[in-house]
Image 1: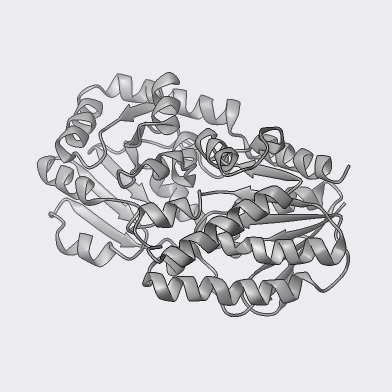
Image 2: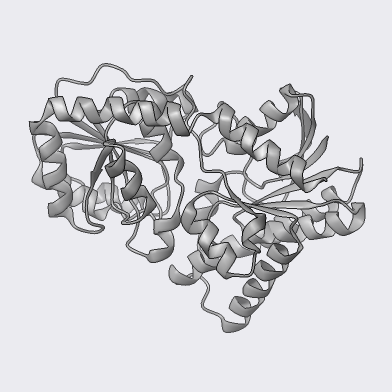
Length: 379
């Protein structure tokens, strides 16, 4: 099967960020399929058998894309969509088009390629766009909102299959017009070979690794650290709000800056006592399927989440961590203090988290599920 894979943010383990498209694509290639990856960058190269076609004009990593203002970000997405469309219209003919959003503008090259090659689309929804930027206040113009809604409905209607990364995202795409029988949930995955349990530090260490943007409301974590001066807090990553958070942080908080490789993230997770997965208190963000949560599971560490939805259900029903109310620093501090004061329970939660990763979120199994969706779309 020849797969045309469209994803603006293609990142290998040598970089930092979501590596889902790389991990899936290399497994597709290992299974005997051909993958042509159209992504942001320059030039053409081959990565573990994946033909990577770089397109200029857009940010190549999500952290950089979200670190700039919204108008500049949207312009960058539009420029990349134009370049990606031109690349997708060049041969060879694919058997299936696998397009990943966000940004929603990835629908444009997918639709153009489908018309050019008479090939089916499998559209993957990692975050609900345009609902997310609307609730975040980024998309205020009513005309642009209308256009984004129309594009969303069009691509769902034209896609042979839709892959949603969480039950909440599945519900969102169905409510936007996708036929339920065409939607399959394939969540983010745990890289069990990279993230592994390590030796917990003597001093209780809380870590956060990932984007520090508007959607990742880390103010409560900084305030919780101020209430827990006997704990060590480590924030690894970058983003629009990092400088502001760093200026207001107490002495027990360390900002390491962005990791250079995925392995550095794995090392931090393994050396932590608990790991945070935090978001701003918006309904659409409760549908997320964040990489950091599944990395935490694989590292065998208790996950502390603040979204009351499927993330809370995952950690509570599987005894894999704790829930703290979004934006409530005192509640977060109380939950972290409980983990510190109950080490046996914390260790049990860590073991449960690793077992959950192995049982439900193994990367090999989820790549196989995604491949099955691609194959179904070609029939």
